[in-house]
Amino acid sequence: MIVRTLAECLNSERTVKTETWQSVRMQLKDDNCGYSFHITTIFAGTETPIHYKNHLESVYCIRGKGEVETVEDGKVYPIEPGTLYILDKHDKHLLRASEELELACVFNPPITGREVHGPDGAYPLVD
Image (cartoon, rainbow, N blue to C red; front, side, top):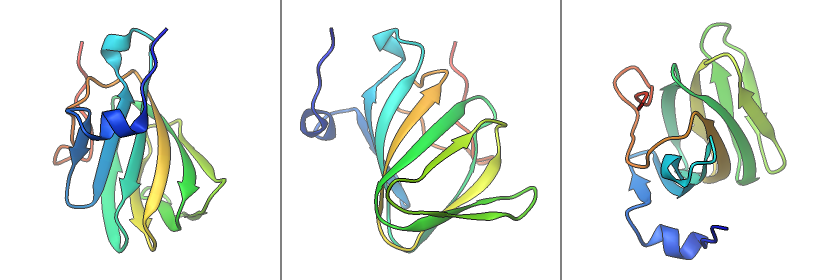
């Protein structure tokens, strides 16, 4: 069994921060579960272009308000506590936070822990 707290992960190399978000990677590829689990904060007033070409992601909103827009069709979906959105088709999207968003995220395949979005909005696929 593996047990970790958000507080201990927050103050470790498991936390990655950029200009628009901070991700606390609580479960990673080396945990050998087939997925990774993160608590991610999207900073208020930001927009992040994302395109997970190599990963599927499920995102559950714990706190805050924002929206996600699918680039291909321009549909905009509100995000608020209790909302789950699932990027099941490697959807290219824009994530906007009108208020700071706290999100629980699951990635398949799992990430290794230090990834940030590349110029194309994707995380690299690591064997």
